[in-house]
Amino acid sequence: MRKVTRYPVEGPNALWQIYKTVSPWKGVKNFICIQAARYCPILPLKNWIYRHLIGMKVGEHTAFGLMVMVDVFFPEKIRIGNNSIIGYNSTILAHEYLIDEYRLGEVVIGDHVLIGANTTILPGVTIGDGAVVAAGAVVHKDVAPGAFVGGNPLRELKRSSDVSATETVTMGQRQADG
Image (cartoon, rainbow, N blue to C red):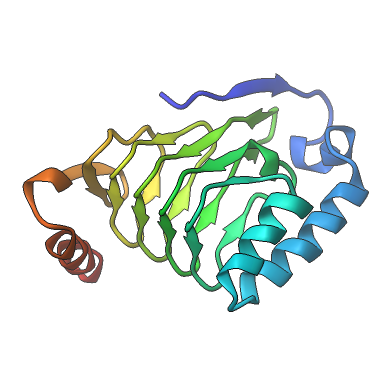
């Protein structure tokens, strides 16, 4: 079960009411900063933008692939440990706006975590240290430390401690390729 806080709304759908929950100026500033970071090829500069301009907690030597999209409205709810990789075109969300409610949840990604390309991480999940998430996965629940997970719905494929890091990445690619 994801750890999210639910906020019911009345009237139009929750997304239509977004600026009752977050300043439009915060959204604009974060959007501009995130778009700059998405295309920035300089990893230390990208991390600086995330840490200092939008308030994410990003560990040392963490690498964001090209086109990673982090939550525009609540990036301060995202924490990523040291020496992790967030793969190309992945999305990390800390909010969900639904018809009758919106939900907010912290996203915690541990140390030495590998997130494959085109992965979506939903609000309220924790990905443990040393975990590997296969490309294209939808992370809708917590991932145990050292686990190798993938798919939609997300399932454990193998413990990464059972294989070397190179084998794990290769297996993740095979899983993503079908």
